[in-house]
Image (cartoon, rainbow, N blue to C red; front, side, top):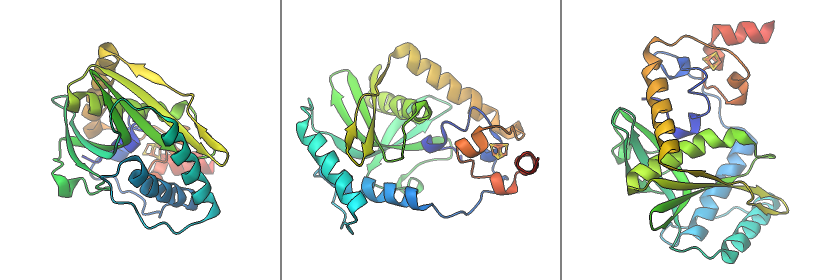
Length: 237
Ligand code: SF4
């Protein structure tokens, strides 16, 4: 299973890259992605004392954002202690999910993820009775509606792992002047069923998929662009 929550926006539009035989590009992450990862590594230890803080090689970009995020966290009144970098494994065929670790990076297989499971990590979660709040730091220039597919998947994975039917999704835009926290979406039992069925439909279509080019090839960072003939033809035309 090559699907992970980070590809939730791509899977419904084109299942071809997720076939086992489709070659993926080995492009190293760009500078923006590298900076974003450094922020995530550093802030996890601030959110959750159980996560060992990373040694921070300070740049103004990073330190400014860490200061803003720390101040934002200090101003919150969370009902329970936040848990950072919670890794979930969701079985697409049964619709069940489990927590397989915390702060494990991308080492999902080493922590027991099976072939039928889809992995995804929430930046941090806060549990409150029958509700789970899923937070995601976003360090790009803008935050658009493209964040929702991944967040809905993470919300579903968390809901099934914790046995709740109500999820609050909270993307947090980390900017150079502060944290923008105005985006919010709530999922109820019907929404969770919709997300479950979408995953089942799209994963089930992978085996017979063919390339479906469109804006999503670049917009959703398809990892198969280098070897995708239809993408190359579209690009050249
Ligand atoms: S480049 Fe586009 S068409 Fe080709 S596999 Fe990726 S998403 Fe599909």
